[in-house]
Length: 546
Image 1 (cartoon, rainbow, N blue to C red):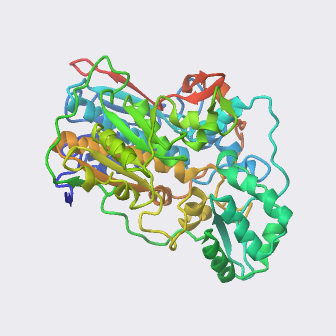
Image 2 (tube, rainbow, N blue to C red):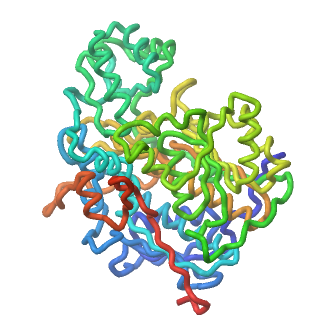
Image 3 (cartoon, one colour):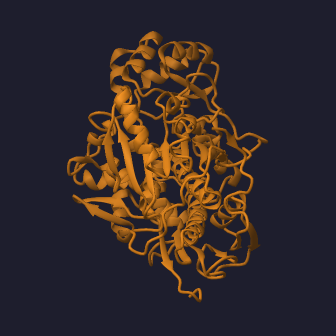
């Protein structure tokens, strides 16, 4: 099989009118333009909405499309600052520093813009499958609620259990030569080797591992002062040399680049030239969502990949996870929703799962059979692993020529050095986001809210929809590769917002428990735990586009 440049973008021939001049509208317009859509900008206000995207070609013209609200409910929200306060982002962003802090980037608005572009793609794909014209709705608060959903799940599962944060400060660290940097490892043995090699006190090493490991889930990371002192006594070069030998990543904080080039496609989308697959299954009114009838085979872990799969599931796709023997280790991490980790449930609700040992020939054959039965194969393995498992595009081309392969990657060939893990906080550091979210009150530091994981997952789901649109247009499969660095790039493109600037009438800041109570329509309750609903709604229009 050979990958080919896309002759015509997925939305070539489609035209929309983007109404409004807010961040979510501008982001949605740019994403649709990158998909090949003709975009007419109408920057006037869209009433009480943040904006709207109207399809002006195809069935339902002028009526189909997507409304972008500030709130999914009657809550009186009118901008990014209100959304960050009401939906818990300001609480979580400030948690590690002792009090609420507003993000200087319009993270919720950027996420909502990508979700709105997805809604338009879904509307076009639904019509291509013989379905009705659709009018969608998404909100900036709904996007924020999607971002904080794992924290809300944790909080509602642990209701009444006091949180233990401990004493200490979060990274980044500072070297003897004045460089601020982040470190990363997911391996407790590597953590131990690294700090022992540097001569850190054993008690500090042991005390620091738990908050460091759990910072992705807790948004806090109180580390012992002795660990900071150990690194402050050494030049960065010495720290890096030791880290490299111990399997630990070290990444200095970088400023926002002055100039940069975007990839040719935001999703590195390529068509496949092995042959044509069968038509996509027709749309069915009996389905649970606009992607009903489509199957996603997902092999992912942590946040970015599972969130991408969750979005496709919430759109109605039948999603089956490939997990190792014994299941994903994250399933048992407390607090629990019934017998399942609340955080895991927040990212994987509604998915099926099969357990396969991909280290064995039988497990790889079963995985290939499963992948060939699907329409999308979504994975976030390191580069090259899919091919080693026999699940690369070339491996499956003859059996599944119409399959859409989506690799939710981390660095995408933009890594800061060999062997550096691609995790949210390292990407924030290397990608200039730590600099972008500096508010003047503290030195630049990555937010302990997983900003690039969340936006990266939304972008990976967008890539799957782009591939499905391409298949609907051409009958051929597609490959896409997105990455956490793409999320960082998009945040840099939008730039700093104003939510963090002092102003009169600061809205009250909600914590995750208050968020669950304030937006009941955005969550469903399972075993007493609040889990996210779909961030969009879709309403079919009749033949007159009403």
